[in-house]
Image 1 (cartoon, one colour):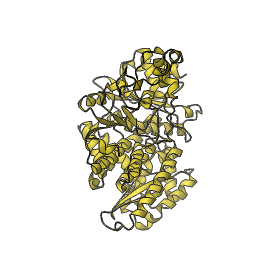
Image 2 (cartoon, helix red, strand yellow; image 1 turned 180 degrees about the vertical axis):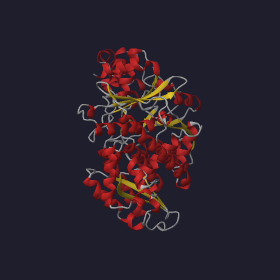
Image 3 (cartoon, helix red, strand yellow; image 1 turned 120 degrees about the horizontal axis):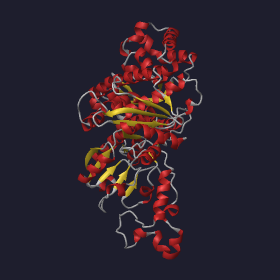
Image 4 (cartoon, one colour; image 1 turned 135 degrees about the vertical axis):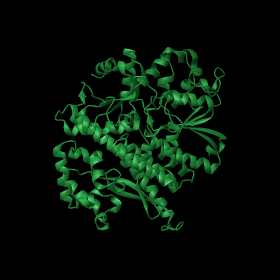
Length: 540
């Protein structure tokens, strides 16, 4: 296999949960084949450029720019790319010597044919066959990207890039797991990491719901296979066993590690359905609890301490009452893992815990330290760290709920014509938390859903949202994030990356487009006005 031929690998991993899970699967494969590697967390393109100067042979997980142009590598460097971001840059797709894309054969990359991009019709007549396959000629060393002087080629490539709409496709962790499966080296741990990777895409709203359901069905087949295979191999009642089960569970965040009341109040689905930021919403919540017929003492205490008789049919009781309150999707397809007798976690619990550890702002630790802690919490030998992550996630979710309530009640969301806009001011409680992309993404998703539920303006219900939060007060910068409109049928394609680039160009705004997710940028506070004006003009 390919992996066993690599002597030394640098593994560059972006800071998101799906990438962490893909990294765990790959680390296990490297361990099987005794491959030496260096793990390098990279937060953006600047990190990648710096790290690349130190590590020449690498495996990398980002493909939405021309890597050879960006990094200027040696001819013998080979890039293996596993990336959920789409589109893949056209030059990366058609370079078959230095760049290897790890993708499913049926993955539609949506790029034009080679001839449409790289072959100039007028040149063809003069140069004959040579222009079609320069990689075989002596003019360019093998391994170098095919380089053309024609302005026409550059224009075609730029036109292709100009049409980009960022979206997420197949989870990188799932791709890695299926690679391990093809090699007959897949394990239950690898399967669980791929489950978390897919769930991360759903939690952070990166993929359409139908894509999530399709991936869950794929994973369910693998779970059935592993459970059947391991029935005889290990004692399913042993204290350190691991069991993955398919569940049709509640859309209540961390409810098994919290009180039921806190979970209902801080879950996006229930909070927006009840409109908990309003007095009427609080009344509705009390009516809902009364309809379930559960004692308030039980609802407000930790889930683990609730009476067993109540817990046994709790999901059915909640679903029955939820249907009466127009919450027909209170349950969702997911997976749970059981470690021995005591520990049970839903995949979404682990996603929230890992994200909270990854973006922890409570201690002055480096991003690399947080990265390693988030990676560690994915191992079943590190349950203490996972529980610590769950505690951090609770505080983060409470902060999101309070910020959403504050923004709705003080009318901080403004309609700017083609989009909605919200700016968190310095001094807002927990504002430091929202200087991180994953936390800001979750806040954005929650806020847009809440706004759509509360507004009477039909036009505003179909608008995307741009949100800005303070990043560095001394430098006077803000982090800006754009998300597509709130809709169950949305394909989740995000066009803001290209729009941000054009708005910054046309106004000479001081921006930094460093994130692998192009819909996240850094912007100088003084340039905010002209940047927004340019965006309004562009998108109108």
